[in-house]
Structures are given as C-alpha cells and as structure tokens.
Amino acid sequence: MKRNLRQGAVQVVVAGALAVSGLALTTGPAHADTGDHWVTLKTNHHVGLYWSPWTANKDIHQDLAPGDQVNVRCWTVGEDIANQGDVWYYITTEYYWSGIGRQYFNDYVYGAYVDNYDLWHARGTNGLPQCS
Image 1 (tube, rainbow, N blue to C red):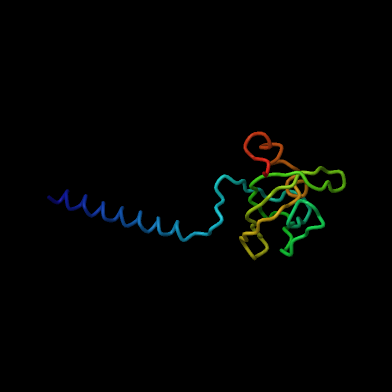
Image 2: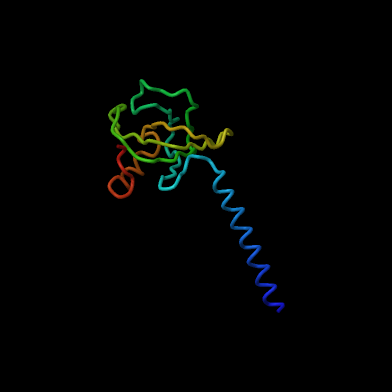
C-alpha cells in the first residue's frame, strides 16, 4: 500500500513538472531558433545589419562587434564588397556581448565579415539552405 501511495505521489509530481514546463514553452519568444546555426563573429570587422543584402539598405540597429553572435537561417547572393565575395547571411537573432544581450531582428549580414564564409563553406550544400 505504501508503494502505491509513493508511486501515485511521484506521478503527480511528474505530471505537475510536465505541465509547468509545457507552460514555460508556450510563453517563450515567438522567434524559434530551431534549425538555425549560431555563429560567433570571428573577424576583426564590426558587422552592420541590413534590410537586404546590399549596403545601401543599412538598418538602424547597432552594429555587431567581434565576438558577438548571430543566428543564421539561410544564405543569399548580394553585393560583393571589395571583391571578397557576394554571400550574405539572413539572420533571425543577434547576441550582443557588449551588454544589450539577445535581440530579434530579421536582417542580413555580410558573410565575409562574420566568419570569412566558414558556415557557408561548411554547410552551403549540406544543411544551410539558400534563402528562397
């Protein structure tokens, strides 16, 4: 009888924990990072955020600094800056280590200035899709 009571108590605790965790999941941010790729800025460049993959379309958000991170969803072809290539990353999330933390801006960043195209070369045909 003690065993049945103990099992019943454990089931109630587990059910409560699952209910709370489900509630926490449903109240999270609307921007899911699933399937995207977190990349740490590895170059010495500060990286601007753009509405499209062209430098004429600069966004008003703060530039990213070396060591900050971006969540890359896909890549696209855009402006070639100083003959370094024309691959841009579409990003959904930025993490500024300088103090403002995580931000959810849907923008483009120039791949050469982010990681010298490391993500694109590593996953260009094997997991990082071209933006449609």
